[in-house]
Image (cartoon, rainbow, N blue to C red; front, side, top):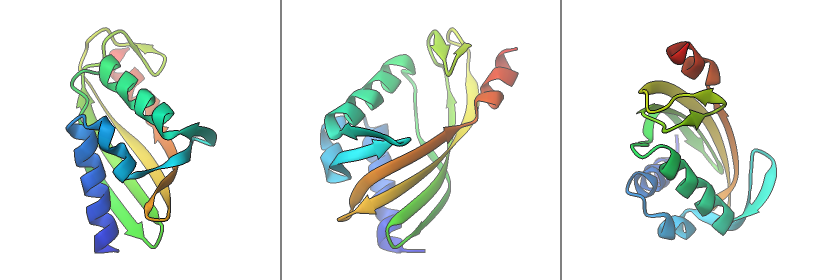
Length: 128
């Protein structure tokens, strides 16, 4: 495990949890892909801003973290109250817990690729 990369990722998550989206350029390249979709840093900032709007108490909790060379893999845990619909499920402010498995590829020391998979079934099971 690369301790510098681990610290980099912990700082990135802290940036998100403190809603400092204006500082994302410290961690994310100007051009990146998110689930194979090309986007610019501003698009990524807007995506995260929308997440915070849809889930006001969104907090990223690192579960399992593996990092080496230019790759980070993490299981993020969430316990939050989305407003309205979330991931195709009408939640309407009910508290849900779920995990996200996310993989990052770094180029020049910054995130250039994000692959994310959220456990939608866990959300559905809590609402149904």
